[in-house]
Length: 93
Figure (tube, rainbow, N blue to C red):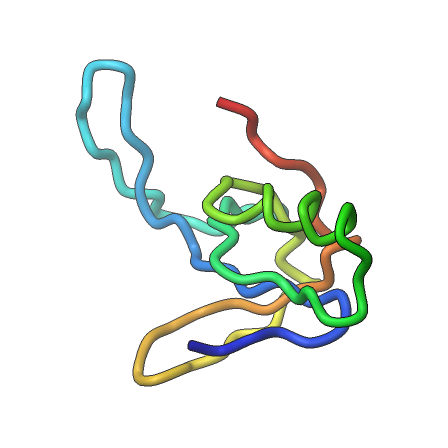
């Protein structure tokens, strides 16, 4: 699996939303902020507490500005890369 370096995070674009009733609705257009899932984070050079904090981001949904992301194809699959500081926020469950 790809391991981001420095303060980068590997993201997967969320292409559909699920309504409270369980209906899957595709997201048809990109707005200024893109909904993503955090799939990998960099842990290199961090202290134990910092690593724990960053690991808590894995699997969470977040918003990131479209103009601050890089498209990446890894093992034939589409991903996005961004700096952790560029995440606008994380959705809490």
